Image (cartoon, rainbow, N blue to C red; front, side, top):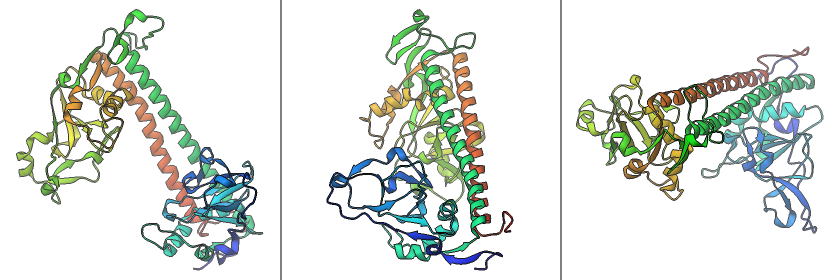
Length: 423
C-alpha cells in the first residue's frame, strides 16, 4: 500500500502491545475483579451494566486477559460482529477480559483513541477476515492480529483523527439515546391511550378523578363507553395464508407473496419478496389480500401485525393470519391493539409464553379488543402514528450519521483526507 506524506506502512504490533498482561494463577481465591466477556461488547461499546464483579474462585477459565484504562478490546471470535470496546479512565481496576479478546495497549507514539477507531475500521476488519480460521467458530489468532497491515500517521494527526471520530461517535450515541427516549415515551402514551381513551375535547380520560367513566372489563379498567369484543366479532373472516408446500408456487417474477419476514409493526416491508404466477394467485384467492386487511405473524414473533395499504396492489401470502375487519373496528386500530402489550400479552398467554409456537386462527378469533367509537379509534391511531413518524425520522437520521461516520473513518484512516498542520 502507498502511504500519504508523513505516514508509514506498518502492522498492528507497531502501534500496540497485544495481550501485554495475563492473569497469573492466584492462590487468593477471593481476589475480586470485574470480568468483561464477549457478550458485553457490541460494535465498539461495552455495556458496563453487564460486567459483573467476580472472585477468582468463581471466574470462568477464559478470564485471563488483564486490562488497564485506555486499552482497546478487540473481539477475535467472529470478528465480523466487531465485539470491540474501549476502556475509559472512569472504569476502576482490576479489570479482566475474556481470552475471546485481544487486548491492545497503545505503544509510545500512538494515541489510544486513534487505536480504538483503527480497530473499528473496515481496514482492520478486512485484515481480520483474511486471517480468521474455522467455520463454526471463526476466530483470529493472536499472532495474526499482530500482523494486521495498517497505515500509521504522525502522533499529532492521530490525536486529531481520534477527536473527529469521537465527535462523530458522540453524535451517533446521542441520536441512539433520543430514539430510545422517544420509543419509551411512545409506549407510555400508547398504554395511556388504550386504557384511558380520549374525551371529546381531545384529552386523556382520568380514572382517578372520574372513576364513574370507567368499568372493569375482561381486559381490566377501560372507558365506560368502550366495549370488549373478540376479533371473530370484529372481522368478516379470519383465514390463514398458504401452509402446504408454499415453495411449489415460487417463481422468479409475478404476484408478490408476503411472508412473516414482510410483516413489521411499522407496516408491510416489500423487500425480499417471493412471487407466484397470476394463475396460481387466481386459484388461491382465499389467501390473497386486499387493502384494509390486517396480517398477523404466526411463528417467530407471533402477534406482529400490519395493515395492507392501497399501494401494495395484488398480493398473496404464506403462513400468515389474514383478518378482514367488518367495519366495527378500524384496520389500523386493530393492528395497533394486536401489536400492543394488550394484544401481544394474549398471544403469548395462549402459548404459555413461548414465542416460537404457532399462533393459530382459533387464538386470533378469541383475541379480545377494547373497542372505542370509530372517531376515537381514528384519533388514537393518529396520535400513535405521529409518534411513530418521529421515531422513524430519527432512525433515518441515525442511519445517515452512521454512513457519514463510516465515510469519515475510511477517509481519515487511509490519509485520503488529511487533518491538521501535518497534512
